[in-house]
Length: 209
Image (cartoon, rainbow, N blue to C red; front, side, top):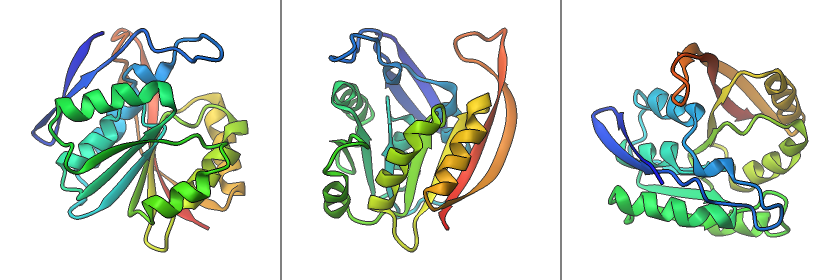
């Protein structure tokens, strides 16, 4: 396990990574147990946003950096969600940053039958955070369903992604789920794990159509 310290708007956020978190069904290592550049790009972009008193939910949170950034940037309530194998790592990062009074960790599988029940329990939120979720167009139906479960009249989505060949297809699929997408903050940046390499990243603002 490695530990990273990320500075967002003058706040140091501690992120514990894990290299030994596996899917119990497939046996494959889960990439959500590592910190990815899209999460960092989104958290840095959020530094200029006004989150005072906001209720924020992160989908596919992985290690939870954007959600933890929301907590230190003034949100009153943050809900971090992911699949069961990743929840322990999320709780560890919440504890490491001392934000347990405003951040909760909850299981959410987009394809499960209880997505609507989850939405009723959590209630409508102000901001839905997503990072590096636009990689498989076939996943957008489940993602759209999870988004609709917590979406209200005032809700907006903030998403960051490395711009890959599949990104456009994912965004088109998300539009078919009833959402509008506006592209922001397109930059090329060096990769955390391979500083000699770079990639293009973008932030997207998402609204209900």
